[in-house]
Amino acid sequence: YRESERLNLESLKLLDQIPPGADELWINNTKIKILNDLGKNHANKKDFKEALKIYDKALKTATRQSDIQAILNNKAYIFEKQNLWQKALDIYRTLYHNSIKQNDSSKTARYLDNLSFLKSQMSLPDAEEGLLQALQIHVKENHKMGTATSYMHLLKHYQKNDDTLKMTLYS
Image (cartoon, rainbow, N blue to C red):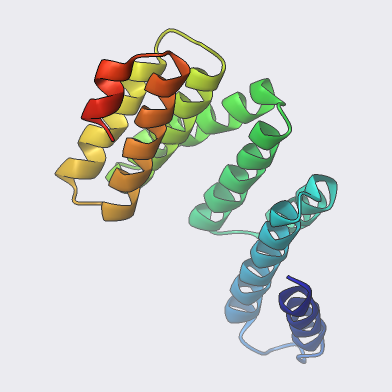
């Protein structure tokens, strides 16, 4: 992670040296990608405080809805890892509802899966329904990575609830 962090920080400095009038959109999008990578590096090192600071900086820079959603999803994941479940739940819920309005099945399935898996950890009653619905969307739309994640979340949900019969169905 150190080398990645060093290169990302160096890249940010180089971007700041580009003279005005250059391709502002490209510069902005590149900064967001770099900040997102830096945030992930800190999250992987369990330096959640720094990761959240970096994500907040990225949110101030982001203008595209897809970038904002990705950054918010990463923030929610960090809150989830810190057991700040209500904060994570609020973000996942907002992302899910926004993805429905945007008619984006891939993001709807992803955010519903994240939301429902968190609900499972919180022992909320509608977790299983959401996990199954997310899986159904992933399968229907042939989202291979999303399908794999949905199966993993369902397995963990049934494992948590000691439902060995359903565990075998999704393992």
